[in-house]
Image 1: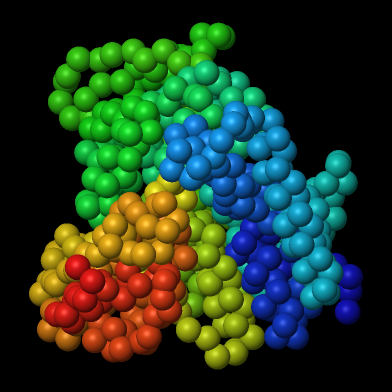
Image 2: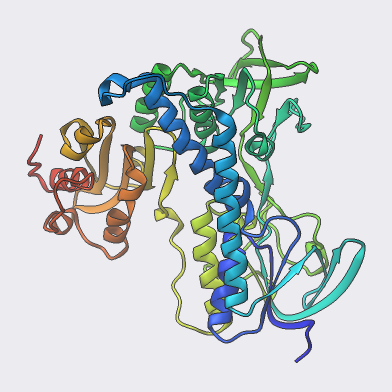
Length: 468
């Protein structure tokens, strides 16, 4: 077989793309991946992974600044940002190296360069002025997303930046305004505030992390106020001016014609969200259908309207999360090969935000469940009544479970507190395989663990919470 022809070619080496390639190779296909910039995608290079390293150091900095007495820490110990930043880059480099190892292990061809589709079975890849043509039987589009902005905000990579420029910068500003209080906004706010940056978050909607359950938003706002982060909700960013020495951010009430005000800071971080990447790689040449929202349209098996073309991850406009892209990549690869597979249930995808305290959630909020017609039952258990959380010195937040009152089926969970992102699988597994709260409550949870808060909440649904 030709070195330039493949059974399946994947365009994009992010979490969805490289996972799809591995699964296709496992199923016996000859596979190639085309990537211009980030092997491992935004997630491994300038997103999920290096940000977690920054957050860990910020958590330690918080302990040293605000909780020394609680833990009996004596003497003058401080955290500086330079080594913190270096550690985050080292962590990223190590895990990206692992992606290349996986490509080699699975005999997947790495093609460096920018790919431009020439037809439904062909692509030209340009790298350092040289262009090579490749052909394929099947194509998986994993082209990711671009940063979404708003009118009046022009990112310049200097004082007006995105997550990418900021996470690669080993210097912190004295002050920053962050536009948006989603995961990126609140995570950067936590890191910067704990390294002494004066942080202001501007959120268009009426509460922080507005896609989460309202009780989560209320709890997080309380902790960020205590941290010293200023949060302006129901407020729109109308414009950002780079003055050379800093920025002038014009804000106004999100609704109505209220008075504008100008906030001066050293930097502005645009964290308004993302848009599917559908331009720049010749998508229009192959006739793939795109929705009015600017996303590649797919069916439940990640098939586009073109027979041999599949799409996964952010470019489809589904939930823009790395683990969603990975799951979609597996479905696409298995569908191509006629292997047994299972569509992704987007309504019940776990969501994780790594601010402090952490946020972990899945399924419907209490409000959403009611809107969908469920007879809703909820139960909430606070970490102040959890022994492990008390021992950790992090007895904050709660576990809230949302269930259908008719059968006590779990249809959502909303958690804020210590390491709650690690507590999600017990609940998502229960929902996936139709376990009721009564059945989950019969599981024996080890003591002392944070998961006991989940046990207590499901006991609450069943009607017999023990430790509250």
